[in-house]
Image 1 (cartoon, rainbow, N blue to C red):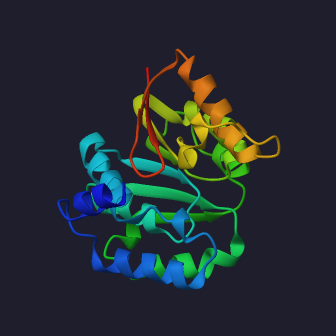
Image 2 (image 1 turned 135 degrees about the vertical axis):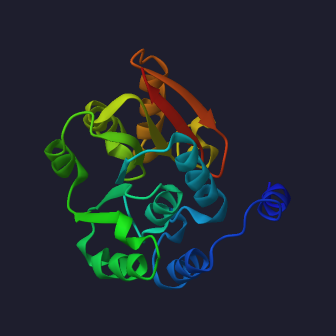
Image 3 (image 1 turned 120 degrees about the vertical axis):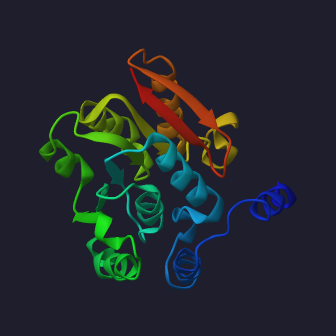
Length: 210
């Protein structure tokens, strides 16, 4: 898979310099740097944004701002990314990264619990959402976000293949894998939406609200 990924990365659009810097710094300074989307997924998020052409994007789990900047890059003029991060210790770091980008003015950062922030938005006020926060709350995020998405709008969900653990025997204490499995199983039966899983990086599910 490493050789395949190397091949893919050498045949897609280059990673913008600022995003390369942000990703590199995350690996040096932070725990769990893979929480940042990275080159391949970042280019996917940008091109999906260009395809969907949303006016408003909602994101749960900002981390370092990498994915928010990819969405912002793909937006048309006057588009907005509303991104929510629960870890207040990352706020200054995120704002610094965003301010360095020519697309930074398209991003609105909220610090707090997404499950408390999201209900404050109007129903059907977003065209696209991205769920990439704590796995144990995935289904609750989905149920909270779905009313905020317009009919025909999209929700992207990250890590839905979870290091391949979704097809392995699950340890009794592995609540993250159990939560991802529960989310995938519930979503597969949900007739309110159409859905497909892409085996890109750690799995990305694309959901369309009917």
